[in-house]
Image 1 (cartoon, rainbow, N blue to C red):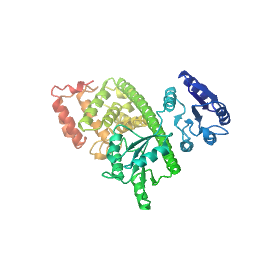
Image 2 (tube, helix red, strand yellow):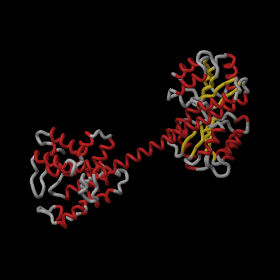
Image 3 (tube, helix red, strand yellow):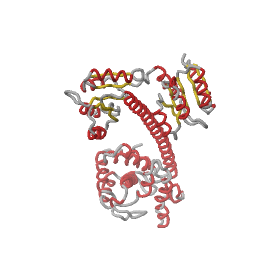
Length: 463
């Protein structure tokens, strides 16, 4: 049974981590400070240390430095508990040869996975040595035996074949080899995305500074000169491998946070879309003569956007903006909205205010910023005689130009308080007449195509 020492100053973390590890069958010992943990290490045999980076007094880095000073603990496997603001400490941890990292708060499955991997040796780092001289393979194995697994190949071609089935943690590449040089092999490796992040250290007998600069500019992580100095080679490789482990951990944290942010954004957007649907229903319920108007305008607008070859996101934004283009009518008195006869000039001015009222209401929905655009300017005219701002031509936002055509089509093709739905030919004629004056010509042409395809005048009944 493996014995694990957990050092953490937070009592709840000690309790929960101990419970998780004991449920996996490990023997667990805990300490709430670095000093106490070191004392335990002196008394009993430990297979793995879980160590918190941030602790009062002797922190995790200082604790591990003290532990590493004792030769018998030089190969002790260590996993660090980290927090979001401990990146500087992680770099130091990498230099102290941490085996892995766990981000607080830790999920039970994460603890089980990384602890199991470290103890079972699947975290053992692998060095791929690429060199055409067999004697160098012997030297490399002798230098790194006991610390890393060393796989050897004798040519660049063999290295590429090896990489098809294996991903080492680092590659030691001889610069000068027959047939395919180390440089050419390196360039081939960099072309494959799955291999491109493997750190490469060149082995060279050339001590020319220009060669070193050229290798580093190519992206090589470092170089080792022949003949090998074991201590130098060992230290350089250790630092590169451990820093690479840290970089992988930090990248996984970035990916995890990005994924969390994307999920949060999707939840916010889903909520916003639900609000859109609810508000749209409220608008149509208020106007007894145009019930369903907002939904129909949204459907027409979406079809126009599809025919304009907009992206899926743009199509969705246009649809929801059209759903709420009349939301400002919530602030208009019912007696004006549902007046059966012709509006007075004063009443019409009140009705016109729904554009600015709607824009103000929707400007607070930050997840869907295009909503307020449609509400604000869908009554602008292409010739500049519309309201509320008298915008002209392409100064009118495209989303508003789309909604304008869809809105007018529905107004003409549906029953209103003051008249019945107009005949399809009349609707077509009015859109043709407004092409270039009331409507954007290109968008009007799309609506005319839709009308031409709607031979039975059924589009107005879309739900």
